[in-house]
Length: 299
Image (tube, rainbow, N blue to C red; front, top):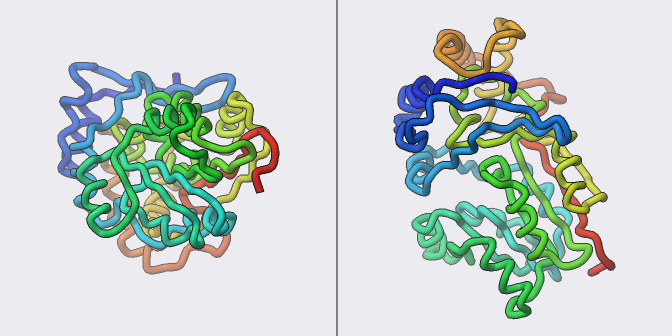
C-alpha cells in the first residue's frame, strides 16, 4: 500500500474542483487504498470504484475533457492503412476516424447518450459492450479487426485483464493493439490532490514497465512505446505540476486536504506560467503502446 485515501475528503475535492457529486459512488466505503502490484508494478486503487454514465456525462460538460487534435491519434493513425479494419473502444466523439486513412472504422462508446449524439453526426459509433462484439467475432458472425485501439480507456477499467482479453478476442492474428494511457512517470502523478487521477475516474496508474509486464501476461511480446510532447490542452497542468514539485516533500500523500493549499497556489501560478512554452523535450501526459497479437502475418 502506498497510501490510504479518505473518501469523504476525495468526494469534497470532486465537488470543490469540478462540481460533481461522487459521494454515492463510494457507497459508504470510508477509505480507498492506493497500491502497487509487486509483479507488474501497476499502481491501482482498491477497491476499483468506477464512474457511472451520469458521472462521465457531467465531465463532458467541460470543453477540455475531449480535446481535439491529440498527438496520440496522429501517432496511431500513422500505422493504419486503407485495408485495415479498426475497432476504436471508448470512441468518445469518434474523432479518431479522421486519422485512419480510409480504413473501415467502427467505434464503441460506453455512454449511450454520447453514442447517439455522435451517430447523429454521421460517425459510425455505437453503444455496445465490448464483450458482445468479441463474442460475435468468436462465433464467426462478425469479421476480425486488424487494429483495435483504446485511447485513455484502460485506466478507467475496474478489470483491466478482462478488458484486454476481450480486445484481443476482436483482433486478427498479428493484428495491432494500440493503447493510450496517462503515463505515471509523467507530471500527472505529481499533481497534488488531483481528483481526475483518482476514483471514480482513474482506477490505475500505468507506465512503460507496468504495461510491458501486464501485456506480456496476455501473451504479447512485440511492444513499441511512444511518449507525447506537452500538448496545448495540458500546458497549464504541466506548469501546475512543475510548481507543485518544487514544494512537495517526498513523504507527503498524493491526496487529501493537506494538499489543497499547494494545489490552489500551483493552479494560480500556472495561470501565468502557461504563457511560457515548455522546453522542447518536455514530456506530456500520454504514453502510447503499439503491440502485435501473436499469430501469422495478416498483411
